[in-house]
Image 1 (cartoon, rainbow, N blue to C red):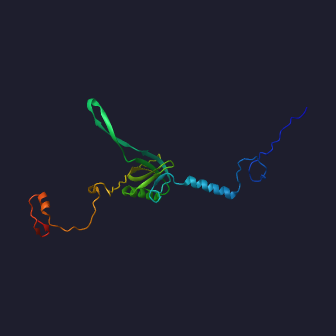
Image 2: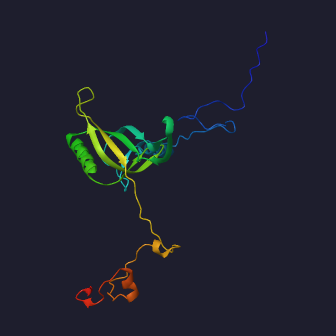
Image 3: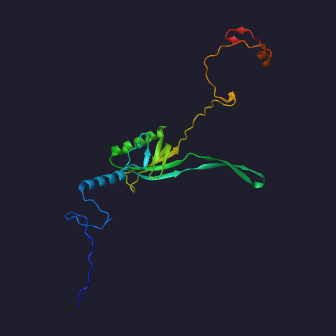
Length: 224
C-alpha cells in the first residue's frame, strides 16, 4: 500500500522564544521581539498609561485635590430651566431656556496609614472652604470651573473601618465678564471715562432757565 503524500509547508511554524533559531517565516507575519530592553520599555510604557491619573479632581496646576488611592465613582448632571407662562383656557407657552450650572459627585478612596488618611481629609476640608476652581478629569470628558461645595463620608466595619470613601459634591462656578462699549453709534451709550477732577463753572442764563429760578452767584464750594 502506497504511503500518502504529505505536503510540507514552505515556512515552518515555530515560535519566537529563547533558544529557537531565527528561521524563514511567511511574509507579513507579525513578529514579536524578544529583546529584553525592548520588552522592558514596552512594559514601562504600558504601566505609565495605566497609572496616568485620568480620573479625579485636579487644580489649575494639575495636582489632585487630595492624594487618593483611586476614584470610585463619578456622577454628573447637566440641568436646564425653561420658563413657562399661562394662557387662556388652561394653555401655556414656553420660552427662554436657561442652562443651569452643572453639578457632580466624585467618590475618592483612601486607605494606607492613619497619617495618610488625616492628610487626605484635611486637604478635602481645605478645598471645601476655599473658592478655588478645580477640573473634573475623566477618560471621556473634562469639566472645568468646578468648586467643592460639600463632602461626606461614612465608615463601617462592612466596608472597612480603615478605608475612607469620601464623596465630593461639586458645582460649576460661572465666570462672568464685563461688557465694554466703545465707538458706539450714540455717544451716550459709551462707557463712562474718568477724565480727572472737573472745575465748577457758573451756569449760563440758558442753563439756569432749564432748571428754574436759581441763584448763579458763586460761593464757597461752588455755585449756590
